[in-house]
Length: 374
Image (cartoon, rainbow, N blue to C red):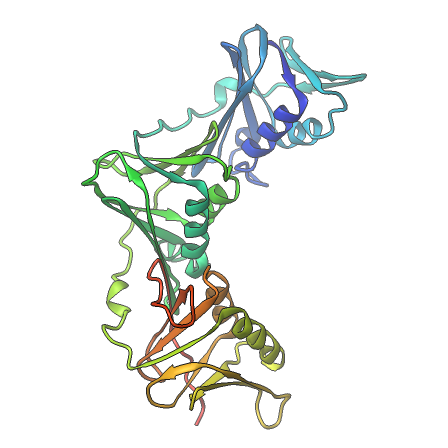
């Protein structure tokens, strides 16, 4: 192999590809990045059995070829290259990287031992990146950290014609995000369950200026693919049945309150400063006022009252403050509508653009209240 590349483009491509390499790979060979030079491009790929990453950049290719080198070391070297151009060449057992007056020599890893990357399914549609990123971040709010229940660490993605619905739950809350996309088949009906951490990683590394294409084999759904700005990721799907969570939403909510989202968030953060670990923050709705309180009689206490636009009977509900903050932070609109039935049944939170407009159903956050001590 003998190629010339732009140093900045090379560093970016290496960093993006290497992000899927585990800190302690189950198999040492998975610590490598594969480089392949051919047809005016340098292709980079990495794999950890759950997620794969493939990227390519323009290159002046004098000699085609492919090699496998240590990904972490290549990342560190590529981001420190001093000149605009970088020259990469190989001998029988080494890779030489030259830039300016700097030269690095890396030992090659046995390429024959590297596993084949999974075959990418066919593209089923695309969506603009900013919409995808927002929806993923919203849907991932309720992803569980319980590794012994893999299904709850996932996000269920439902493809329903021109709508895509993403849902996650950790049993205490439910996040559901919906967006419009451009499917290749307008009648598509399919679903996939993918690890929330992998989906979040894909979203964070997406170029917001270009669309993201989604790939899935609808007949044999085992892999989900994402392509954006020349970068291709695949994620292994979770084999399991996602809980039937949609029934948790109430048909009607007799008690509703509307409030400025940022004012509410700031007040919750202040009041929760006195809340002990796992202690709730209380929310009392009465007479167009919301009183937030935390702490017990023999402990530090805090309370704050906010104006709200309220319909329905007075009610007091209590929540885990972290869950409350995370859900409210994911709402994109400036106002939030809080919809309640009783003090112990799940409460729904929706965003809305104006204080007197309808709520948006693009993002629905459902949170189970904590029981108050009598």
